[in-house]
Image (cartoon, rainbow, N blue to C red; front, side):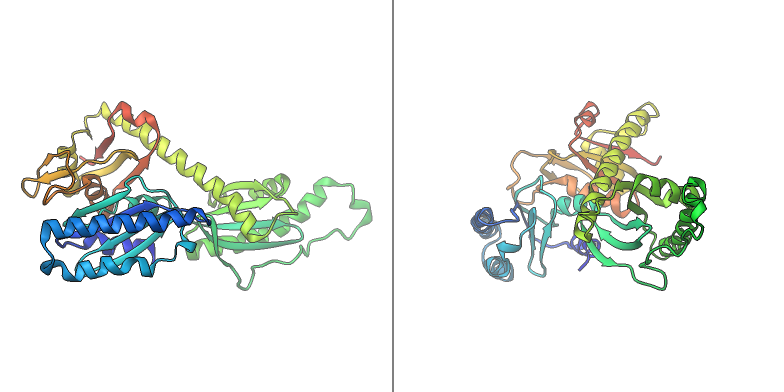
Length: 359
């Protein structure tokens, strides 16, 4: 199931109780052995808390799911974090390529989906084009992995058919560049077709000169959103996607910085909220345009009615929501707002959670 579909499914779950278990994990042995031990301890904690709060009989199905989790997870294939979502009706296990900021057991009437939202926001699909006069390959990528090579009537291109037929032109750099531009113009037209089909922007892996020539002939230069120098000794798909992913991550970080800057400018316009209750009410009303949360911030609350809550210190209290920021983030995201989780300290000038409203 795609991460977006999992997020929507988990966000719509309302049950008592919903158990979320989150932990950082390791990709390699022997560090991954620790993951199994940590998971067993968290599952035991979850079982004890559920029994103490709800008794055994009403949550028999949930307790059965808790007991079966360890047999369904192979720690040899962990990523950077593991998230287990369990209720009487639901069982979802999600591995993410991001560390979590809310390790532990979370029990409420909804799932703690903060880490899934963060990962969804930082997951990005894009195209990677390896461009040279000797041939052109195009790949679809997701984060730091290749999804597939694009193969159609045009891609991949073999070497350029536009070659010099006149010996006296060998030293004419303008003429030689013109031949390359003709080839790259054909490549660009093919890439634009793929862009219209997929909506994905493209990172170009090439020499600097080839990248300049491509932009000179590009019909939609704005879809080429990044460039990295090609290393012909390390140009395998898994290597070029690593180069591309570094560019994507830098762009994401820049977008988070810009969002913080825009938030600070919006303060003077009177449409920025910093009180947690005010933020929650605006979010459920569909007024949230941009939410920014410091990644270390979480807050347990106890609802007093549908629109208000009391802040509490003990997240294990009966009826408590372990982290209200998960609920707020989903309300903003599901109502077409933007959500950013950031480690950037400048957001703390405004508060650890801030919301820019639409009106």
